[in-house]
Length: 110
Image (cartoon, rainbow, N blue to C red; front, side, top):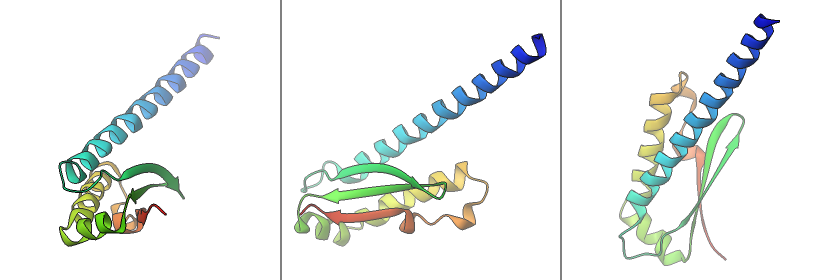
């Protein structure tokens, strides 16, 4: 009986650790997003987190096409991709399979 309770406790602790770790990474990624895109002469784009096939995905939505073009010209997209790639390089064991440029999609609000 005590072994069963111990196993349940270990499972709950592992789950809690995984959730807290994921939330912490998401908070850091959102802060990186703000560091890249805020305080610029464009409206702050929207960021949506997701997942596909076990990998994180990010959808960045710009308010206008001019804002998107500004971000392209000033390499803001590249800066955000580099920061996301750095997380995967640090936290994932199979970094060769992840490409931030594939995981991040950019669109303009229509």
